Length: 413
Image (cartoon, rainbow, N blue to C red; front, side, top):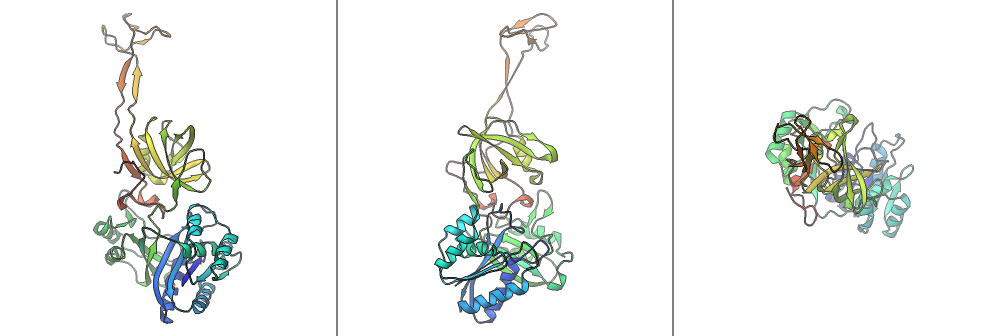
């Protein structure tokens, strides 16, 4: 059977992955065989999300009725039901429903009635709490398919320590990253000297290690020095897969969805208030604004080095008329020229315009010239893929260290 659970946390605490890890232990204690525990990230732009819009699924051999009762009991005891926007959902299904609902939930938006239709068709056991919105994520989790799964080892604090400052040795995290990258990623942000894998919210998570195989995340964890943990669980995930991205065209993008869009840079990038950088991208006669926000740090320097005429592929979420950049491929670097008045051959001073279609004139000696000076503008930007730093990366965004496959005909870097 498949067990799906979602929306048990709130901004003030709890974590749905913690509930999944506790449930896995209890199911095993009841004699059931837990074959897999999944952490499924859904559309990162859903307004109802608490933090990372994650749901969980467990693949279990055992009694569906017993598992359903145990799951509901655990949700009732651990979920932050007093929080206004916490609306859990619990699902137990004997067969995996079609994956279409999952893909819609990770790339678009789903309604509760759609989830109920999927569950009823599959003859699933389910319970929704309060307004039942958690049934959407719980259903998506049991419908999930992950062609290229990644893994995350999550460690959890002793309950008495919840809400207190976390004790994780910073240098040990950098050591773990050094020993295991690129097989693990997003433990730290080496470029900016920051820790990424330790949350700052008052939930049970101590830290998490993401990577390409269970062995790699477990090996990295061995190097981390921290306070004592109460529980640790390796999850199969869709993180770092770009599952949220679809091909898009400027002028035909839906609010809150995430896209890959190819086009031509048509304006010089501008740095606005707060250090945010923007430029306009044209695709098939339509244009869209692309944004690199201040938290993307050095990635903005790459964006600033773009010039009109550059061919790029941008990836990111479309919100309020802009694509918020997660990564970008420079497919073709343009070769702009600077047209300026020539230097006078007699006195060595730069000339000025003599009038429309009258060439140029030297104000010092009166010398004249017909042709302008054309100079190739030097470019340092190279073709290839560029990404935001780990501290600004979304859970679903595929890091370039994973040998990013890109699109047909794209340049890899």
